[in-house]
Length: 328
Ligand code: GZL
Ligand code: ZN
Image (cartoon, rainbow, N blue to C red; front, top):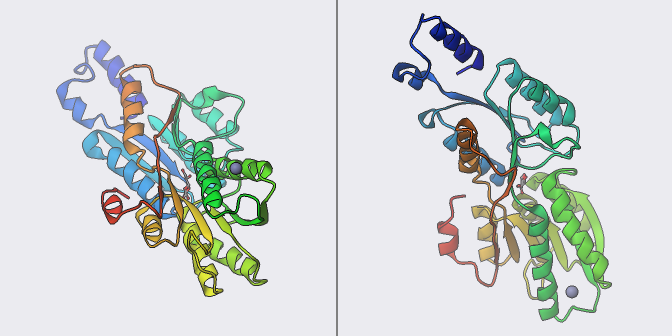
């Protein structure tokens, strides 16, 4: 219910004109109104993330969800947030496409006394009071898991000293997922004299863009040992281009393809060995957001920053049962 209406009923109740708020007949109408600004629909991961949010924040659970798909454009998100403020929603949930440029619009939300919950990706800000909570992945840890596995795999391939040619397909530049996953690879390359990045391109977390940039890279037929893709969609696009150019994608004597997300589609490529390692990135964040809102509604304390536990799968151990047992 809009806060103004609740305030009005409260004042009228004091004047003895209407039953006090929260009487049974008002309870049903008191949906918590949530404005959700989502990055877009760029990947299977994102579709699963949206589904999780819509399921958790549904009317049967006591919410009215106003959903906006920003098509991976920050200005669309800023416009959506301003609209949520004008509608005087009770909460704003934001998955910021990239990390910078949020202070001004989030100050407007703060001035309107609307709590902002960040989900999935983070913002860069000097004023942490501009958001109430963050729930998402530790992208730096995801990247560390990947490069640790790669280091061990290269030793198994007896490539701990011979040159290792790496193609790095980055996610949307400036997004938390890209920053964390890229930083881990860059640190590992710095610490391994024989690892060299022969190409680094922005794949924007989409299969199409990754196919396009990888098709350009393979034109000169370089020696490629590893392709580090910052989500499943990019890995599939890169593999399309690699296989069309005659490259084999496999862990022992082909191109080692590394991916993030561990969606059903990505894991099916892992099962057939075309993706060597897939690091999980859990999109099922809806219930976590609902728990945060519920705690706030009850005036309970909440953790400001919450990371979701995640694992990894590789072509040696993944089974169809693993895949069938997963929700996305
Ligand atoms: C990660 C999320 C990323 C996914 C991509 O939490 O921000 O965005 O890894 C998605 O699939 O596009
Ligand atoms: Zn090492």
